[in-house]
Figure (tube, rainbow, N blue to C red):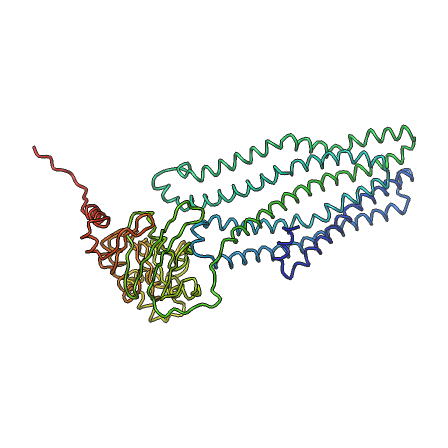
Length: 590
């Protein structure tokens, strides 16, 4: 009932269609049962008339049987129409509500949940609820009502044969309850977990196919995907084999009514001598009893579908239960754009140690602070706390003296531009990709951003210029070219705060030079927090913070840090040595 209430909420104004569908389905079930009774009346008339069609009742019963059967089909069609209308509304509302909430999530949410998993939870699970509401749920009324009416009929015609019918029904229902018990629910959870895992790994594998093909590897080289398939196969095979005997026993019992009815009918004929009435009732029971098998199977599928729908709703709610960004009731306006970290600490969810540990520093407005350090030291985490990708566990991050938590999220996003090492371009035109920085920008502003980002040559060589599509239907850009388009987007946004995370990491030398020129223009007069592994790009920073295990190990200008002969000095020497590496062949002098 809890699952049905949740689904009914998403139906909105179409919630009335669900009870209407079940009512029509119940009428269809009753209409589907009546032709069997009418056939019994026809057989009785034929036996009493000696096998002739002289009785007018035979034709009447035949027409009624045909009419009721057609009515049953019409009722069921109307029931499915109603249930599908309700199911489509639930499916669309689930997706819409999920996407609405996901857009309000902090950007760190997307580090915890892969795109494959999010797609599986939202898209596939919404489809599961649709299938349940559109197909299985309308059968609920018929699956419940049909056995009740059938039992009443058989006991009304002959209670002794009725008791014989109940024996296989009770055994079959007991067997089905056993199979759909605790182990069945546990399997459903494992099944959904396995599907999510396979979906996630499949997306990652597809993305990695170019690497797999370049190095002439196979699916086995992507161990996580291969392992998820094997785990799914092992789980489903084990579950199937576990229920092999119970299901075989159920199938034999539920289809074996005649083996219980025939002996009882023979005994009744022997005791009463009224073979006509007994044979008539036996004939009716042989027609009706398969309905028990059909309805028990319907109930089994309904129970399974209900379990899937409940699990789907539960997983979607769990996904959306992730704490969204808090929105201040009375947001404060930012007037200045200095950044201050005051004893900030942060731990990732379920992490055993702090990623950032008691960090304090300040970036005056218009100045640049660079973060350097080993991979995993906490540089990216520090940078992402400024735009609230994550909420600080302790301490405060402030802009212009205002805690970022007290700034409206839309204002915070308007004040901060990001340029990360993993660029993201949408499958649309170059112009629209650039306009994401400022949809209201004029054509002249777009052109200035293109020139400032060193994109003019890139745009001019495209077949349709700014209107060239990106992706399978258009063209592909290299990593450095994509980064320049992203820089044009950031320049067009013209935010007073800029966060740079390895902006030149994947650029070739030519693109790196152009990107560096664009970055200088982007950073001009801005408050900048930048992360870099190439130390030559941070030598002009107003302050350099050396991060080690989530803490500030050293800070100062490039010259000051070199004079201290500490961690930065060692990093600089190692970088200089690596920059001088050459590949050559030592001369062999005789």
